[in-house]
Image 1 (cartoon, chains in turn cyan, red):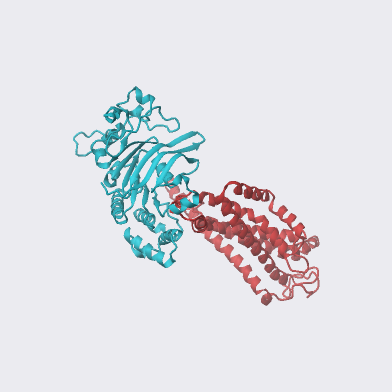
Image 2 (cartoon, chains in turn blue, cyan):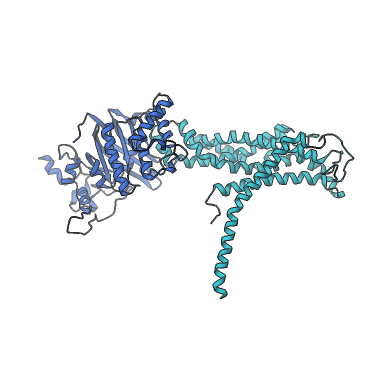
Length: 327
Length: 292
């Protein structure tokens, strides 16, 4: 485990709903979560489980018709939900920054790569342009971009290099927390690996906390200290990475890990989780995983499972552990 | 045998058509640009190249085109060529002023309306749509009547007519660019609204402006001529194409064609220049049109 220098982020009963024409979408429905300084959390879940919404809501950037309905977002003890838009703007990039999935469209096509970083620095710090330019060069060097590419435009960069530039941009002001929303999903496997290595290296160098949002559980296993597993707007399990992969608690986690193909096993059958991801407008009653769960009992259909702190750190939301918790 | 030949021939024809079509847009643009440049040069050099004073009687009224008067003289014995040369200045000046003013007003309004949205957007859009609801000429006539004749009143009337075209385009572009990921990314790193508008949105709107500008200019030349034609624009004795056309056309019934034909031709030619330039630009700048 990493050395944790106090609490970095704590979410308390966070609810983010989308008020769509088709009905109320409970994308994030009562999430409790905490992470320490310098920790990396892998936020894992399938498409539509609410993980990206959760990431955006920490920066209060949930697009309309989405809204933070309830709960608190405590960042180093400050409740971000209470902050004004202008106060949030000062936090974004400076204290918490975001790396997007698609590096092809997340850079301004008419702005030089270097100027992206310079503008970011100037937006937050009262330094001269020369100083900002000098720092931008250092940052680009840190992410492995040659200084002579400073004046290139985004279209002159490859996908991997754009993502490197995005990372440089996210790190420009040495934030305490970087939220990386599927940072490698748009890249091929080799570049994916390079970017992950880069993020690992920079995480050490800059000492920042990171939330890595991904649907690829193997990526999370490579880089994260803790795994937060989301299912249908709920955080169903939160464990340190080692325990999560050794002994997954939640039936969904167990089924997921079984579904990861392993070329070393003689059994070559591809396992999968039966059923479909739930509809978030009409989520299943009780535990949202129960229609697909092989352990489901009658209580799972009726009541939402409580948060059970089974391990020293972390929790699981499942009735299977009720007895174990009470011991 | 014929069947085996017909296919390559038809496909070769198709390819030829395609390449002609591809080339065409460049010819359009350069021809249009050439015409505009031609008139600009004439306007600039007017005092040096015009053979006579455009407002003085220099010969017998209604002299036929000859070597002495290449385009003949008008009903008051003034040289038509000289009047056309000086008239170029007026029409270009009016076009330039009205285009500059409508850009200066329409573009910022579109940016603000699209970016800020909400009530401000509804209000400005309503205002612009009500202006846009009038046919351009009718609106220009109404505004010109209110202000009386003259060069500046003409230019400001035209300005009001063309503001909504820029507004609509810029607002639409702003709305779509505002939703793009790179703007969201800019917001995520804490960029100020001012920076987002001027460094992220505005530069991405600029490429759509020249096309509209050029097509509007073509329209403005026609509308300006029409205003002068019905006596709401330039007043005598200032040389102006629309006004000269108006003064010349009653002679048509007596087979005296030159006092109206030449100014009319100039109006058509300059309009054509701006149109060709605009259409060519559209094709060049928008790869999704044609070329397939």
